[in-house]
Image (tube, rainbow, N blue to C red; front, top):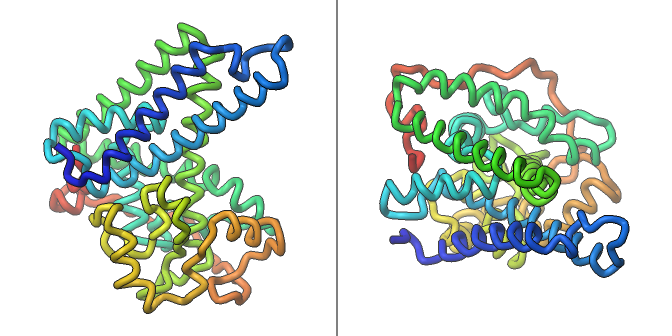
Length: 323
């Protein structure tokens, strides 16, 4: 059923997310909702479980990104069903990932047609750029999604229906869980979903800020550490992903070594994502280009229109998505 055996990890990570939610829901004495009578140990265990839930929701957001580029199953019907599963682990309809990511960011990287371009973040204190980048680009992403799905309602009705189904599944599950226990819903489901959304968009900032979008090789930053890539399905190998968006994530390290590493500026292959975050946002905390020179942000206007025309081909409209 799987196109690549490596996606057993994808399925397992979804299962872990659901398992963490169930464990916290059923064992409140180990949760953050244990109350004033909670022991130090229960607060520690509850905090650890909450943190793990946030991380695994983020990992499922990465799986969402992978799925809209390279479907998990051979069967179209199973891919549609799996998109509903991912929707409830990530907290956003999977189909809605395609407009802002595939059609805006990938096609128009770091230009005014890229709603996720890092030049929108312009705080003088660079740490604030890293923390609030997601909030800065979210309005543009949501406006683009709304405009796009209005446009494809008649052009790609099957995909539009899939989007609506995913919306219904997500919001329906939210309502049910909130009615059962709104506090548990907020802490164990909603907040991890928001962390996942913040994390997946923030990764875009790490992977592109200070890079050269006009360069054949130096347009993206890579994080090549083994641990981070095991948990994020090789998402650290970003240059090769832009070069071959449909390449399955399990093939990225080999392709990176062959097609990217020999040509890219060495500073764009970072061994440690934690180390990069520390030196970029904490100490010395300076915003620089990939080659170490100061980053000078150009004057730029608002987003340019990136929505395809209704008369474009289905491929131009993004019909490569599994739905």
